[in-house]
Image 1 (tube, rainbow, N blue to C red):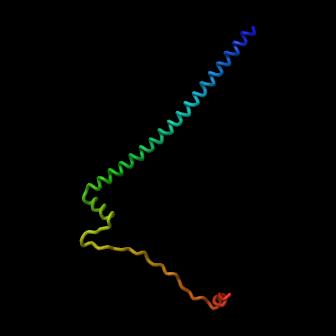
Image 2: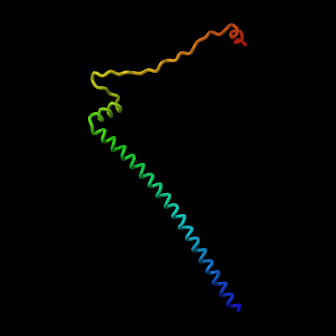
Image 3: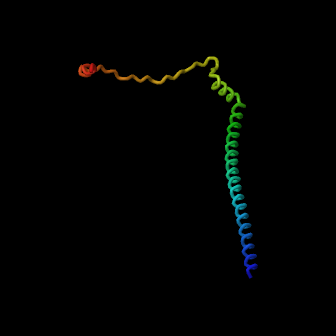
Length: 112
């Protein structure tokens, strides 16, 4: 009778150890799956950003394929003008600060 209880306790102990071991394996797999999903989302966002950049670069190349696009690119990059064109410089208006002369009262107390 005592041997049967000991065998049953030993079997339950082994089953508990196996269950704990399987639980830790499952927990590790869940963590790895979480990392994989987050990396997949990050890779998808990078792909979308690269696709957007690709479209922008293709639009720039299409614009540079025309003579007008090349002219605009040269003008902005090097600041050049065609013969006969004049440069217009836009200057912001100057602001004048109002000047006032100090009163005799202010001049009297400025000595102190």
